[in-house]
Amino acid sequence: MGTGSERSVLRVEGLDDLHVVRHVLVSHGLHHDESAWFPSLKIAGDGAGTPGDGRTALLRGVRTAVRLSEGKAVGFVLDADDSVENTWRAIADRLEGAGVAPPPAMPPEGFVGESGEYRARVGVWLMPDNRQEGDRGEGTLEGFLETLVREADPLFPHARAATARAKTEHGARYSDRDAKKAELHAWLAWQKEPGLPYGTAIKARYFRHDSSAARSFVDWFRRVFERV
Image 1 (tube, rainbow, N blue to C red):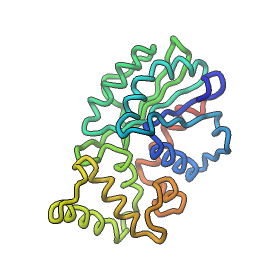
Image 2 (cartoon, rainbow, N blue to C red):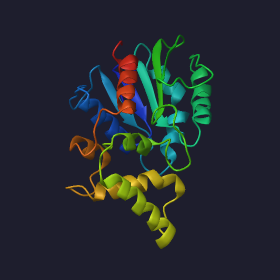
Image 3 (cartoon, one colour):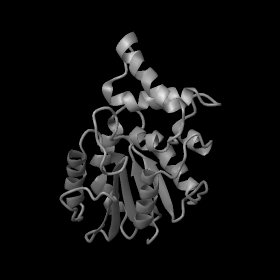
């Protein structure tokens, strides 16, 4: 990762998040090349190896990321998981240690603030929309992707029902927290080119890009990074 003197940084939990964010931004006209986004920006995935360690790495590195972004901007995108309140508190506590004054509750439009100590703009987005949470994966990247499935898509309700039956009737072993992930992968398996990764599926337009959650995310991104 480059230092804050080189460019702003958007930090995400892992590679799936990185590719989804990249392709959603491109779909909204925020083009990039191999070296940097406009504005000068790097998207960095944390802890893409062991499942679950991306969130830990992101939270652990909040103060360092803000410090290195002096004069630039840094954004953090992480899953709300089963509690927006608890996730916001976890990152807000760390922002306070980096000279940021976060509000008591997560703003529904995403958080944008400033670190006076490090002269950095700081943003936080909780997937999917800073509001939704749940123990079946609603408050995750997959919850965000579900909003990108076209409302009239005939396959997604079938994928949801088939996934549920696989668990209740045939012993499918996915956890309840991964229900949304299982549904999306079943749906992707039935596309013209089966099983594309999330980002590639956005590029192939299997997903749409203009859901309310996606538009709000892009608006938040612009507020964080386009005024640097």
